[in-house]
Image 1 (cartoon, rainbow, N blue to C red):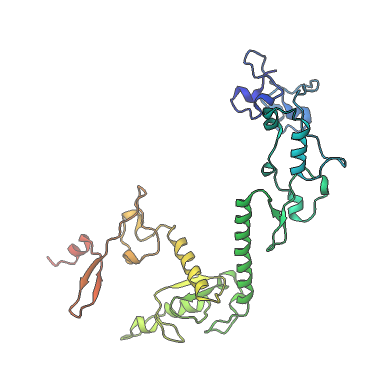
Image 2: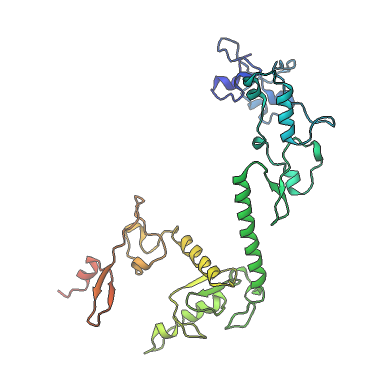
Length: 321
């Protein structure tokens, strides 16, 4: 019987396939899922739903399932099977040997306890010291390192959440993470000071209408406690304990905003009032990013200033004709 996977050029068994790889042989249109009673397509299946005799078995020996008299670990099973079936021919050894790296991690053992125990055909991983699960593959160092880093990252975040439970807002004096709604359970981080605020209080403070003659920078944009000037507020669900953690929170926030298109820029059809200081992405409709060129001007006092970008339409619109 012709292998239906070979017809489509996708047979993964190669010479070990129990079906024929000769295009002259009759095609196999029998549904193998129907033979097992698990075909979900029913009458819509493109293969024939007929009962056939048992499929011809291959002459190639298969790795035996585990038993009490055989080695228990997958690595030992692979080596023992290759040793028992190797008659001194290197080609035969390469045919049967399965590297332990190819064995998948047992999901039951990783979650807690495997019901098969030592007779499980899958790999029982090493215990992760962070999460306590047996999910570290002994023969895949890249996966081990990636899992360890991810676990340490989650552990630090859980510790930060635990510390943040007791932090109170400096304005309303409520615990930030005990607010009524999820949208209120966020901190508003100011870049230049370390006073904690809930996101709602600090935004209300900065969005207040300025009084006539009031300096916006020294009042609304400054911290209500220490009066240090901060140009933007960073929302965060955790409170930091070190300056490095604060920097990481700000960097992650900026990176997230850089993936969002600026509504003012509008793919080149609008004008963003923030110019090169905008945190959002300035991309044109064809996908390329706006090239930010800063023009530096020297003042009479010897200071260097950055000139604002002026559009020609703005200049012409201000002319009195």
